[in-house]
Image (tube, rainbow, N blue to C red):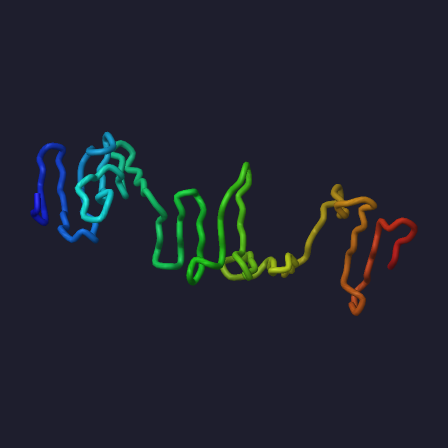
Length: 178
C-alpha cells in the first residue's frame, strides 16, 4: 500500500510507510516475527516493505526487552550488545567488560581509574603508567607475604633514591638494604 499509516488486523500490525526510497519504513506488531512478543521493526532496506528483524522486542511472558543493537544514552553511556559498557563525556573514559570468570574495568586510552568510598572519598588511583596510589594504609595480614613475582623474588618497599622514608630491598642474592 502507498498509505502513510496502514493497520492490518491479521496479527495485528501497524505500518508506518515512507515512499522516500532513502527512508526506512516501520512496523509495530504483536507476535509477527517472534512468538509472544511485542515488536518494533524497521524495513530491511530504505523504502522497503519487508519487516523481519525487530529492533526492539518485549517478551509478553517476562516483560524483558531485547534490543537488536547497542543501547545509547546520549553520547555518555553505550551498552553494547556484546555485554560491554563504555562511559564518559563521549563514552571514552571507562570500559566495563568481562572474560572467562572475570569482570574487567579499564580506563580507556590515556585515562586512569579512581576508586572511591563513602560516595566521594578517593581510596585508590591507578594512573596510565599502572602506578597505584592509595589514599590510606595498605595492610598485609600476619599470615600473608609481600613478595616479588619472579625469582629471586626481589621485593621493594618504600620510595626512590631521593625519598625521605626508609627504603627496604629484600630478596637480592647477597644482601638486604635498610
